[in-house]
Length: 147
Image 1: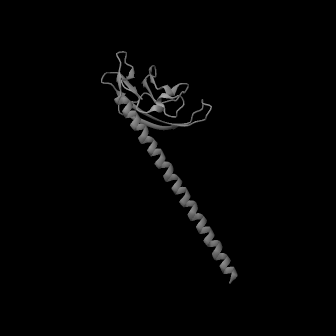
Image 2: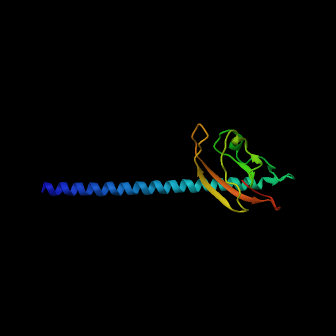
């Protein structure tokens, strides 16, 4: 009889280990996906506000016409970065937080198209990875930009 109890105990242990393992992996994926979706929504909101607070100058360069919506855009290495750049990558506006950072935001997007990606930063001492949200914007002329 003790052999039967031992086999039953081993079987139940294996089932519980598998159950908790699968549950843990499932919960971790759900949490990770939720966090990524939340980051996407937050960055999309910032991009929309920055576009609303900007206009195209006579030289064809985007510029802000009001204060930044989040104070962290004003502090170097704050973790929140923004820039406007022409589709050819030649010129644009950068937030103060971008000083010393080379974040490869996607450029060349047509108006209304977006990109959301995880970027592994290789050129920064902190090893900080970033999420980048880019959107193509047309300012009502032949000139297109993305943020």
